[in-house]
Image (cartoon, rainbow, N blue to C red; front, side, top):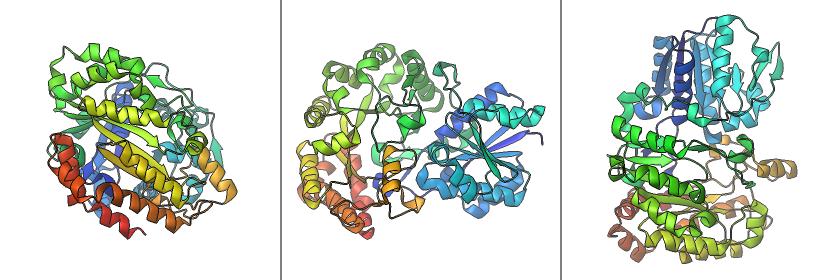
Length: 476
């Protein structure tokens, strides 16, 4: 079968109510689509973003049938496993000859399970997908052996085949800009209301892939081979400028798992300080607390070029649990980081994890007190979730700790496992108490609603309007 027309599908997903109403662009699909355009320019490509259009499954079926693609590709996180599977199931229902391809961390981590549970999947692209998908398309069009393509998993005569893993791309600068031109009709619909308001143009940038730390609950470092690879800082700055000037991107989320302020902060400052776009953007970065705390001068420089929001994984104040997580940070780092961000008028966002094996009512109470004491502008509390592909998943599965195997609940808002002392329901109750204590204070909410910081005002109005506390309570 010749591949002449490709349809990328972003399937329907439930909003993660903690973050409120938001609609992110399908960045992973756009990165892959851009690479295919570059390598095989005669292929016709279309992106169907059912999130942006807010269309039903019936309408998705109608659209796929109308477009009549040769290949359908989709991707998603663990909690979106079933929607990806339903997408390819619909494609096969319309036309069994449509080649269905899925990718991403979840399917990479459990390819055997996925091919067995979802027989409508023809191919799983494991790991980095650009070259693998291009070679797959060319193999259909040129008659080459699919079994020679690295990074693929598929069935052949009922037997599951895993080809050797594909080496990682050495130079990320060679990747084209994500294909936002394929979704220009949707651009006004992408927003992150809690962070920047519904009318602020929201776009996502990828400056690096992977992480060289080894946190046991994290899916990213293992998926990317335990390596951190960055685009050049000039390329990152060019991409920021391109998104802002070409598409009006204002709130820009740099999705690198670890920005590495010490390594790239000064260079990004030097690249953006004289560009006009710095006056029109709001950068959202993710960084480790030790990296922020040890580089105060660079934090100040990053604020001057449009960095308004920094998220840090604080996780827990319990030293034993931090060692279990292999986090490598200290409590003092969290205090120093939040103070430094406040002093530089950067919105501070702290992430916490509860539900580790040693957790008790007492240890989680200490976590709650700690999360208030370090004074972040925004706290998100998550239930420790054994995502496939993590060290924690292997340990939890081996020891029979996992009580909930419904991937739809792997959203970090549902408790999946008990601890040694707490039942799964008790972990869920403790999660709600964390939100109740941090956001349930009348005086804190009033202060937030009338804060001088625009982002903080937006956040607290969101938390009130979305009834986040009430929604968490319903999970118990």
